[in-house]
Length: 133
Image (tube, rainbow, N blue to C red; front, side):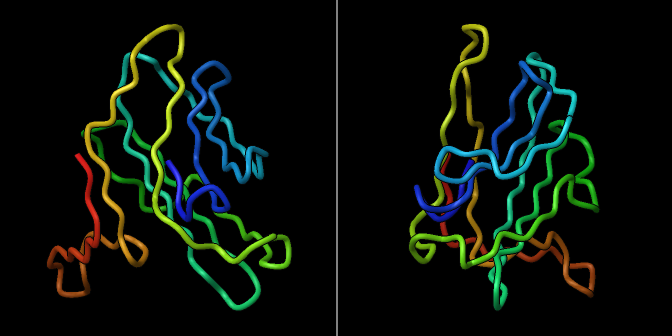
């Protein structure tokens, strides 16, 4: 799953190595160990937040139908100076089958800003700009 097209960033779940990776232009920017079970479904959340000198990247991964973690699994800054071109483009979904098992995306949502499930009043907030099912 990625943001800002081919010049942007992607998160990748790698069950063979039990890793979650942040990738840009085919290169792994950062990774972290995370137990992944091929028979389970996972929810993924990826935020790219523009700051003055860098992009703040936040990654959350959790088992489907369980609680969304409050804290990101990964949080890193990527300097704007390392970009060849300004980030622009759309969200992307890509998958490579693991051990010959099919890959299914149940749904995907893209938000203009970082996803915030509830506002200060406890109300669900939905500022969705594009959705794919």
